[in-house]
Image (cartoon, rainbow, N blue to C red; front, top):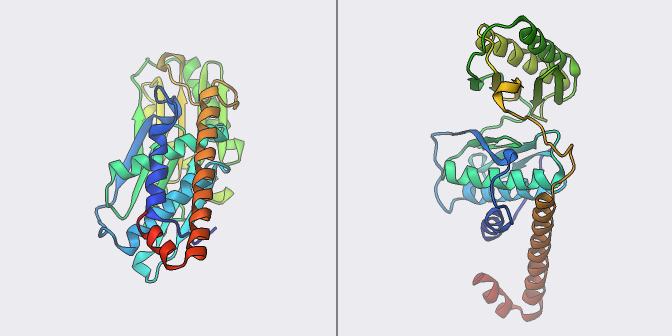
Length: 293
C-alpha cells in the first residue's frame, strides 16, 4: 500500500502531544521500551523531507485507531524527499491499546532519533519505523536484539517443554503466533509486509538462533528480534508475560484513551473544515488568518 498524505506539521505536533494528555497514570507493559535505533544521516530542518516525514508519522498515528498494521510511502518532488514508514501492533492488542501504543512509539521516534532520516522503535506492544530508503516488502533476518535470561540449570522436562513451544510456533502459521507447554509460554510475530513464506523463513531463523544462543544453560527466558520478525519464550521464574491478561478486551484506561484520541482528531478535523470555509468566504482575509495558525 502506498498513500500520498499532505497534513500540516502543526497538526503532527498536536498529535504527538496526545500521549501527554491522555489519562495514563503509568506506562502499561505494552508501552514498555524494548529497543530503538537511528540512522546516521540527518535531514535539514524545514526541508521537504521533514514535511513529508511529519505527514508520514501523522498517518501512522491516525491509522492505528482503526488498523493494527499499515505502511505508507510519502512521495516528494524529488527522489531524496521520499519517506517510507510502517507500524504494527502485537496481535493480541485491542484497537484502543494499539492506538495508544503507536502514539507512544511515534513520540519515542522523535525523542530518540531527532532529525535523522531513518529510525525504528520496538515497544512491548507495537513497532514503528521510517526511512528514506525503501524496506517495505523486503525480507531481512538481521539480528537487532538478543536477550537470554539467567540460567536455571539444565532440566530435561523444562527443555522439552521449551522446545515443544518453539516447535509449535514454527508450525503454527500466520503472522502472529502464541503457544504454551506446561508452564512455558511463547510468542512470535512477523512484520505485516512479509509474505507467508518469508514470515515462515524468518520465524524459523529466529527460533534456530534462539535455541543456539539461549539453549545450553536453559535460560529462564529468551528474546530473539530479527529485523522483520521476533520469537520469545518465558518460564515461570522469569515473571514475563507476553500477552494481555484481559484476553483481548480493552481495559477501562484503554477505552478512555481511545475515546479521547478519536474525539480530539474529530475536533481538529472540524476546525480544519471551518478554517477552509472561512478562507473561501472571506478570501484574502481568510488566507491571512490561516497563515497565523
